[in-house]
Every structure is written in structure tokens, then in C-alpha cells.
Length: 381
Ligand SMILES: [Mg+2]
Image 1 (cartoon, rainbow, N blue to C red):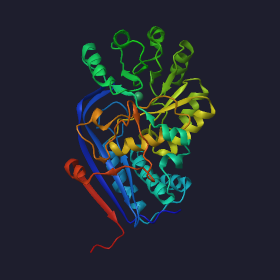
Image 2 (tube, rainbow, N blue to C red; image 1 turned 180 degrees about the vertical axis):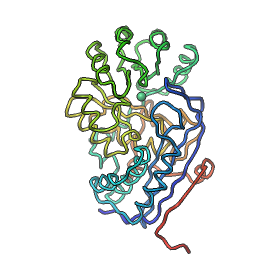
Image 3 (spheres, rainbow, N blue to C red; image 1 turned 30 degrees about the vertical axis):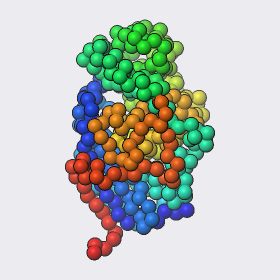
Image 4 (cartoon, rainbow, N blue to C red; image 1 turned 90 degrees about the vertical axis):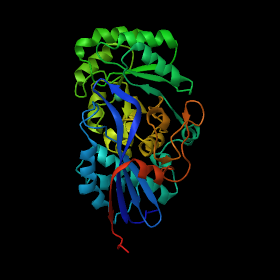
């Protein structure tokens, strides 16, 4: 039940272009960066992905360069010779790393992959997901960015909806909000619809959200700044639409403080933002205790990052469709076998092989890699 010791760690920085520029209230990005962490033992390979956006994008201050430094400088060397036999052992190891949570997430999730293979269990099973949820698969939601015009926004949503996505999430920012929601409602009728503001509003904007409250939206995602718990709580008191945390929910303590203040009714779980599956599970369980529903968000990540999200999204309290989408939705290509895809309209299947259940395509990795470094205890032959 204990994994074999880690003999080799490989870090690979990949860059794969987005199909179209991804725009939110805080910036835009055209190339997706990811650092793949590969942990090799005598009997298994564990995979994780660090998936920060390029510098200057609005989600967080974590960058590919910073995560590479954390992984190559401290995390990768510290993993050589280690083995894991429990979730607690993974948490113990991850707790020794002083690093970006996006960097920690890659190594931490790769350890879950190793643990699952050692225990002959999927990551969803290790997390404690109900069998029925695993069998049903994960509901995929369509997320779209900001567009220069409403016509382009409507066209983009229309082009994707036939894939059967279980809800639509649009981005808003001051000046591009009420009009967008009104137009999407008018055009698509009673679809499940939500908005994500990426922290672009303040408590001075309550009237705008009172108007948006009439459009029967699933939730307002991160309407205000991450630390503005008073503003979020004031908004939640003023509207019936649930407020959902994203950027605020960085740690268990911050999420708990927000729940205590009445600042949300829903929390978006992001493996990258919180530093791995263990911290995401802890936040999920806290929310469950407080009657706050969850769902799984994404950066979006490339294949291995999304695959870990698929397992997370099977947890009992994940009650809304996720931001997990097929590889071909965002990217010109992806590096996993299989590619992330919908098995039936709007549904992503949960892999049944032990561990993560996704592999890396070596041809794709060679094609898109910009940098690679390995660390090993094996004697070079
Ligand atoms: Mg968000």
C-alpha cells in the first residue's frame, strides 16, 4: 500500500496556443503555459501539472517562471527517495514546501496519482467520492471570455452549445454586464446561466447586481475583490442570486472567514489556486458542513491539470456543473492520452484505471516543450 520510492523527477515546461485569445476583466492571454511534473518509481509514474497563466493575466500573481523556480529549486529535489502511503503523508510532504500554490499543486497531485496506483484505487475513490457520482461522470459547463461585441459573444456560445454543456458562464466587467446578460437571456432563453466578474466590482455597485438579480442566474462568481468580505456579504444580503467565491477561496482559513461573514453560498474549488487536491478536499468538506455548495473551476488547465479536476468534481458536495471542458474547447492541441473530451453530451467520464487514469503523449510533449529538467537518484549508465 506504500508507493515505491521516487527515483526520478522530470519537469517539462509546455506552451500550447489558445484557439482564440482568452479575455477576462483582468487581462488577456494567447498562449497556455504549463509545467508537467512526472514522478517515476520502479513500478509507476505519477503526473501533475502546474498551470499558472502568463505574467500579467488577472487571476493571480503566480507565473510560469516563478513556478519553475519553485519546482526546480526546492520541490523536485526534495521528492527524490520519498514514498507515500496515505493522504496524510502527502499533506506532510507538501507542508514542507515554501512555494507558490500553483507549483505545489503540480507535485501534490502527482503524489495522489502515485498513491492511487499503489492502492489500486482511482483518485476519486481516494478522495472519498460516492460510487454513484463516479459512475455518472462529471457535468461540463461552457465558460466563455469577454468579446469585443455582443454579436461575437452570442456567436461563440451558439457554436458550442450543441455539445450539450450543462450551463453557460459568461465573464462580465463594468460597462459590459447587464447588456450582455440581457442579450444572452433573450437569445438563448431558459439556459442555465451564470456570470463571473473576476473581482471587478465594489460595494458601490449593489444596484447593478439588484438588476442582474432579475435574470435568474445560477450565481454571481467573485463579484468583488478577494479580500472584500464586507462587500461580498453586503451583496449576498441584497440579492437572492447566490454569491460564489473564486479568488477569495485561496485557503481553508480564508474560506471559513468568508462563510462566517455570510459572504457566499457557493465556492468554486480550484486545485491550482489552493495548492492541490488535499487542500481542495478540506475546503470542500468545510463547505459541506456549512451547507455551502461547491463546483470545480479551472484556469483552464491543459490535460493533466483538468484530469485531476475531473476526479475532484465527483465529490458529494460538488453540486453545480464544472468549468472542466474538452481539450479542443480552448487549445489547438493537448498533451494527454486520451484527450479530455465529452463521453456523452455535456458529460466527461471519470477514468477507472488506478490513480489519475490519464497519460502523457511523448510526441506531443516533444512538440510543445520549451524547457525540461530531470532530477534522479539513479546512477547514469
Ligand atoms: Mg472565476
